[in-house]
Length: 310
Image: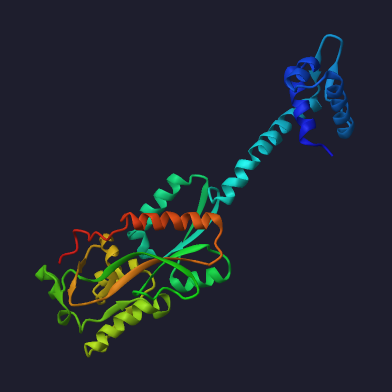
């Protein structure tokens, strides 16, 4: 067995190329240092130094050991810092899932700020709808995820942090008669239009809130088309396949042929929450703290884009 003390003694001799100077550097006498080097050579079964009365030189084996010994000693010296950093979440690997709408809202600023303050944490990002995220949590493939849902309807069984609440606005074709007014729409202006909507399983609480609002107003909505990704939904609206309710953040997605409008008297709200398992790793806790601080300092306060007319 070779211990770190032997390697430090070897490195001192290799750098000084003089046993006396190396012994003084190590605050020890020369005989035990010489004995230690002999013991190291015996353990490795190779000569590390060529010695004469006037000089000490490294052998090829000694040269090879010096490179590796320095590397090992640097790693050993860094070990306490590395362990402490990992325990505090300053290093590690964070697997983060997110729904597409979050990329148009708080996600870029959150990730940018986290990377800046935690440069030694590697991020693995995965765009995924709620149903896919829940399966990924079950398979231990993600550590945390951003999801959208109706107010107070974050997925059960997780710790949650709501970071954003925003109204849902209507995306409609630019040539729609109601779009030409340039004002906040009335619900009756669009109540009979077919809906382009996401399947219920990818956002059940939002789907149900939209359906419930129509039914409360005595209307059974006509579903013109289903699509999973919000970007696809907006594209289908531009093709004239119907209108769509989308979180206000998505209005940053400017698609030709589509306009966004607030609708008077419609209480539909979309919440964005971070979810994670109760037993979170330190790096996950650090990310949660970062998101919480951002929310508390109003960094995620909703600011309606100028393109949404009200």
